[in-house]
Every structure is written in structure tokens, then in C-alpha cells.
Length: 221
Ligand SMILES: [Zn+2]
Image (cartoon, rainbow, N blue to C red; front, side):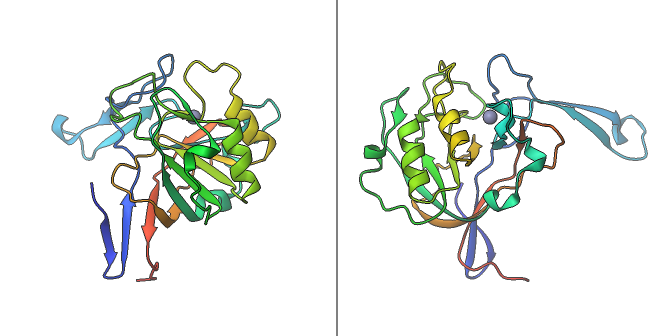
């Protein structure tokens, strides 16, 4: 999927997977389900449906209360985290490993939001356990460079079997924000404007987001 156009000078990349009942979620988590209450096909006067789902669905923002008992819920988080200058950096890692600062190969950090492209979770509808994750060292390094949000194109900033949640914990201690499950395959490395606003869900530990990366000026047309 390549960039889409907003006007001649501006392109955007949709970095959210399609949400459907096929979308893979964490093994013990609640899959997305949509049920239809009123349907044209059944003689209804409109289409009306409802959904049940984990809040950790597709492209989503984790809230601090997901990984710390005194953390904020997603509806309380300030939106500045999820809106603004954002850098995409590709790494080449063996499957199932954490990304360390040295794996950035000296790339300069140019934005306060950083998305790490690992391509280790290639199909959002097909779960694989050997995805890459961040490392606490990388979190510390990015925080020291001024990062306020870190994201990754896998289901978690920690490895699947990490019950200590080492990267989540480092992110908590630096009061950063997390984006998980974004799709970066078509996005070249560079600096963009990120828009990935979570829903204002009271007490919730995450929210799905419609995440996009914008290249160029945002016009008010
Ligand atoms: Zn999550």
C-alpha cells in the first residue's frame, strides 16, 4: 500500500491494519466481534451494529495503567503524545530479538516520536510469536534524545514471553507513550507528522487508533 494524496503537496500513509474478525490478537485476548442489530437485508430501516473487542486491537495506544498500578488510563492521557513530528527507522534484526541502541546504526533522532520498523509481524491476520520488540536500553536512549512516544510494528514493545515487561516498565519510568501494531511496510525511513489519537475511554488500558503518517504540509482545505 503506497502513499495516498491529500492534495498535490501532501501525502499520507495509513499505518493501521483493517479491523475485522480475522485480525490477530494476543492469544488469551478477546478477538474483535461485530454483531448486527438492525439490517436492511432483513427488512430494517437502517444498518445498526455493535462491537465487542480487546482494546489492544490492531494499531493501538497502550495506557500506563496497562503496565503499572498507578498509571493513567488512556482517556486521561494528553493528546500531544499522539500528534506531531515522528520519525520512522528501519532495523534489521534476527526474529525474536530486542532492538538495542546499536541496531539503529547511528541514525540521528530527529523527532520526539519514533516508530521502529522491524517487519517481524508480517501479517496482521496471522499471529506469529517470534516478533521483535524494543529493549529497555533503547527506550532509555530514545528518552535521552527527547522522545515522548515510541512505537513498533509488532503486537508489543516487549518480547512475547517477557512477563516482567522490561520495555513497558522503562517507558513508564520515563513517562512516554506507546503505539503498537502499526503497519510500516510501505513507509520509507524519514520524518512525518503522526496522527494517532486514542479514544477517550474512561479507565481503559488502551485504545485502538487510526494511525496515519503525513508527508508535507497539512493544508486547511
Ligand atoms: Zn497493547
